[in-house]
Image (cartoon, rainbow, N blue to C red; front, side, top):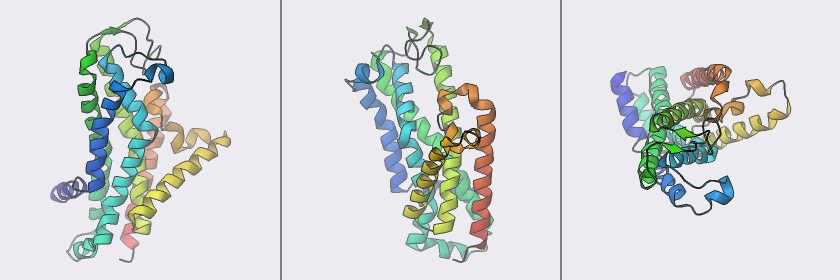
Length: 256
């Protein structure tokens, strides 16, 4: 199983969409470090490089990171179907469940790699502004970017690492959902569009207050609301396991 997982990771990170996504995640922070309109948009004048890290995370989680994760998970199976390599792979004495689980684990690892690359790019982009303690906030703690006084480098790093970890967990059910649709449609484009459409539909269901606490989309900003992690993390895990189980079930029964 370990060899299969390593092989699937190798194939995943060879995908052009994954490579471009990692490059975009790395370069995005440099745009924020040089952006002239931060004061107009966020009311912020950069006081520390740590704020570049948080800006990159907040901007990426608005759309870019979820989209990149959905595309990667969709293409991990869709590319093999389009290239005709999936059928030849299934000719080997390899249980289908083991194969789809290896693809699932690699897709679930990708969000953390993506966020790690973004974090590294943010640190480099923020170096000119300094990475020491400063008067202000990261935008992720009390007081937002204004802060509540002096914030040490250790406190800023702790807030940012915690936020990135939560953001990675938020992206897990999106990867599992996209892979589920990939097993259904066997197409990168169709599965990615279906995953995005499902998220948009869930956002519309916010008009039903009784459903809102149980919707996946309610917790897409969990990295900004760590106080909601109690229920949020449990639901995100349930969604991830549920989508993964359905993906394995569909793939096992799929006529290829």
